[in-house]
Length: 224
Image (cartoon, rainbow, N blue to C red; front, side):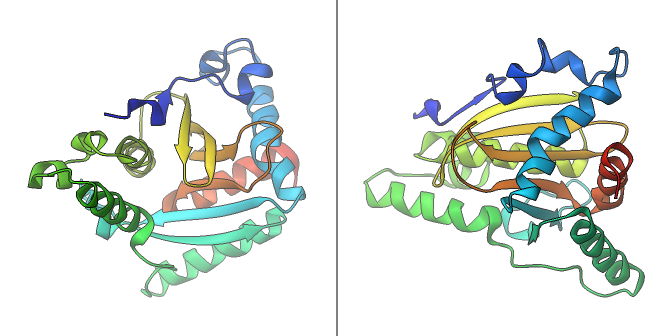
């Protein structure tokens, strides 16, 4: 099983800023809010100013569900906090008006999972129903650990998590990516970024319920 596709608690760029990122955002940390501003500057605002930030909003899972085909998402390129505010307003207006939330499709997880299963079977690997449908079994086939890693990120962002910060290194079709995951009183979100000094977009990933909290967090720390 190709377990080298992803590694949780792997050192990332925040390890070059903080001695211990895992304690830097804890509620008991000295200068916690300063640490949060420094992290959001490095991971969100700097790529936003450079035109390299995509907001990915997820929704669709509820009441404990986690079927890949039920996970919806919408992508929005951000060049300012004003652009984030517009997306937040669009979601709010859709919710208040009883309209469907913005959705670019339900293939964020389902499509790469189907491709990985098809590729494994084309290589002669026999996959039973449990391996196909139980996320913890996906690492049995190539790219399955990457998919399982992102599944866990989506699940934690939807249903919350106790750990304030988590750092993951994951191999993706776009190349190696650092995943910086935050579960804070101010908001819950993740940033999927290229390795430091490498090209590519960064993705600000969050559940639709966290649009307003994350916008307020960024505005409070850096101004509108």
